[in-house]
View (cartoon, rainbow, N blue to C red):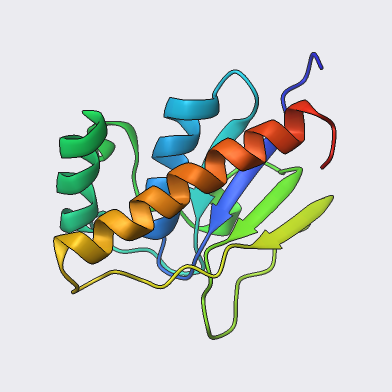
Length: 136
């Protein structure tokens, strides 16, 4: 596959789960797909707990490499992964769409954040495997 598929991780505010997914997508699977994140609204800063815990676990500084973006700020994508908005998930044209149904850990304990980070890590690896095997 010469052209890597573009994957967008989407949630409403693009400040926590989708940002973690973008960071881990770049970290774990940049050889398989391009990672983007966006939302229908933006926050002035990425969730500070997410920034701290991803930096602690992976040594990735999301504040240096990412910022909160709107849907129209990212290129056209092949795959859209929604995080589990529980309300009205943003819609983006794509060839394949999946909802990961992840709870927003904002305001919760580090332990809850790590559970979500670990789920995103596993989901990224599974997504990369499916793309590699052309099952997506």
